[in-house]
Amino acid sequence: SIPLSYFAGVARLSRSSILVKGTQYIDRMAGKIHAILFDKTGTITSATLKVESVMPKGISSKEFIRLLCHVESFSNHPIAISITNEFKVKVDAESVKEIKEYAGRGIEGVVDSKMVIAGTKEFLQEKGIVIDLEPEEEKNLLFATAVYMAVDGRFCGYVVLKDFLKEDIKETLQRLKQLGIKTFLLTGDRKEAAEEVANKLDFDVVFANLLPQDKARIAQSIKKEAGKAATVFVGDGINDSPALALCDVGISFARGASSIAGEAADVILLENSTTRILDLIDISRFVRKIVI
Ligand code: ADP
Ligand code: MG
Image: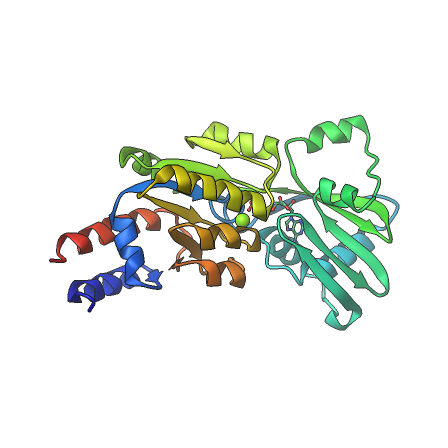
């Protein structure tokens, strides 16, 4: 039987906007935690990115935005949501066919019988698309988060976005360090973007350029070195779901997160603040102390 205090604990957690899918996760958060692994986009950065510029190539700006919004309206990724919110294009869902999203890479679909691909530079290049940019542009894009687009196999421009760190993440990492918990950043974004974050925040280890299976593989190896201590993953995207499922405790956000991440997670934070993870640890430890 489940001790009564767990119910009080679950109630107290829900008052703090934390939903726990089982009492075993309270036990795991109360016990020794070896490491907490964080995703970047939407997890330690705010779910809304700012669209900084649009650079169409050989296509009108209006048509570029129209095609991009038509495919991105089918994605839940923070980048996709930020783009569709920015341009407010009226999407004709009927005109879009064969949508396919590639976790951590991008999305493709047929819009008015035009083949549209949007995503990372590497993703487009893998599809055989040639991206010819001026050296000056290449340099500017090195540290930027950008979405590249191709239509019918031809590169036709990019959008530059800027992301913002959540205000609370610094405090969260400091507290976790005091608690003796290791912190990792696992991102699908580029090395330069990850380094920019790493320069501002005190993560123990940073990994970039990861595909979903890479995140899971790294989580697995950290879990191995943790022994009996818990390994926790915090993420929001479809690219995070393998790692969320694999760790002892998977934590996701209710807002902005993909439904697949929500299903894979054991704990859902109803507020976007990462300090809720500290509350989860504190309340879990309090509950365990009064369980006899
Ligand atoms: P993170 O691990 O930091 O949350 P993701 O793995 O979700 O990042 O995404 C990695 C990169 O893949 C993004 O920076 C973006 O360039 C690209 N990407 C992913 N999904 C999409 C999408 N729907 N549209 C455009 N680009 C995308
Ligand atoms: Mg993410």
